Image (cartoon, rainbow over all chains, first blue to last red; front, side):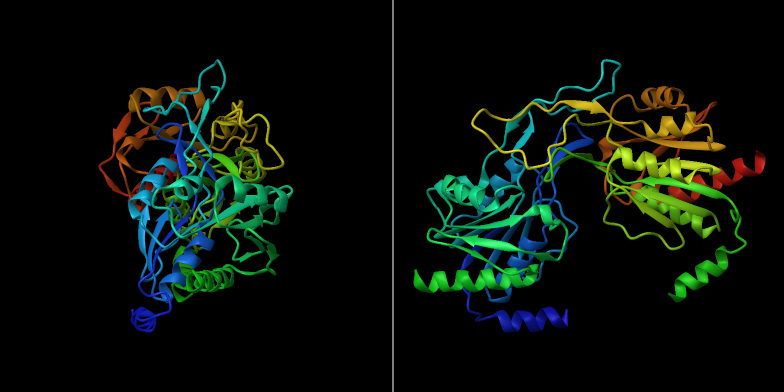
Length: 228
Length: 228
C-alpha cells in the first residue's frame, strides 16, 4: 500500500498525464459447451507490463483482459472478459482513446454452435467441430470512426515471422506491429524477443524481460505523442 | 518453512503413513497448433485440496496435474503434464498405488492433426476441426492389471446429474464417483456441492468449501482402507 501510494505520487503529473490508453491482454476463451473451450496460449504478462508502465507515467489506462492468473496493476482500470465478442464490445466502450495497444491473443475462431449442456461422448465417436470467424479486434479499432491516433498490434508467429508480420500490419491497418517468434517458448515466460515494425522499418530488439519491452515501447509511444 | 516442518512432524506416523495414492487434477490442454488449444474449465483446486489432505495424514502422494495456477501442496510429489496422453502415461508410471482419486478434467477429444506451425487465417474461412478420442484415464486405471484397491472418479455434469453420474460409475468401472453439477459456477470457486455415489447409494453432501470436501472424502477413504 505504501509502495502504491509512493508510485501514485510519482505518477501524478507524470509524462503521460491526461492521455487515455486502451490495452488488451491475455487470451480469449471460446466455449463449445459449459465445460469445454477453445483458446490460445497467453499469460497476459506482456500486456499487463505495458499497462503498468503507462499508469506509472500518469496515463489513464483501461486494460481489457481475457482470463489470466495476474493481478490488475496498480492504477490501471481492468475490464475482465472471456470471449472475443466480449473483448471487442469492451474495447469499443472505451473509445475515444489516444493510443490502443493490442497484445491480447484473440481466438480467430469460435464454435458455430455453443451447446447449453455438456456435449456427451457417444459411441459414434467425436463430433466434428464447425468453426466460425471471430471479430478482428485490431482491425476493427483501426477502421473505427473514433480510431485512436496510434494503434499498436502484436503478432505471434511461428514461420517467416518478419514476412507474415509486415503483411499483417498492412492487412490490419495498424501503425506499428510488434512481432514475436513464439517458437522460442515465450508463452508464460518473463523474457521476450520482439521486432518493432512501422511503415518504414523493422527493428529487432535484443532479448530482454517483458517489463523492459514495455518500458521501451512506452518510450517510443511518448516520442510519437510529442511529435504528433 | 516452520509451518511445513510442523506439519511434516504431525504427518509422520499419520493415519495414512505407508499408503500410496495417485491424485489427478487440473485440465488437460490439447494443442491444435503451437498457439491454439482445446481444453476444459478446471482450476485444479479440488484435486490439490485432496492431495494436501492425504499428505497431511502421512500418505505418499503423487499428484499428476495439468496446467494450473496452483503451487504444489507441501509434502506432495507433483508431476506436471499437458495432454491426456501425457497424463495417462504419468499415471501408469505411478502404479501400483493403494488408491487413485481422479479429479482431472481430461479432454475427451483432441485434434486429429496437430499443426507444427500456426494455422493461418485464409479467405476460405475457418478450418473444420476433426477431433479424435483421447484415452479414458479413469477407465484405463480401473481396467489396469495393477488396478488400485479403490478408484474414485469425479464427474462434472450439467444435465440429469445423478442419472448420468450413476451410469458413468458403471461404465468407467470405478468404485466411487463424486458428481458435481457444474452449472452452479463451481469452476475456480472455493466451494463445492457434490454427491458421492458408490455401488449401493448416492449421498448428497451439503455445500462446503473444497478443503472440507477433501477432508470428508479422505475420511471415507480411510474407513475403506481399514475395512479392506
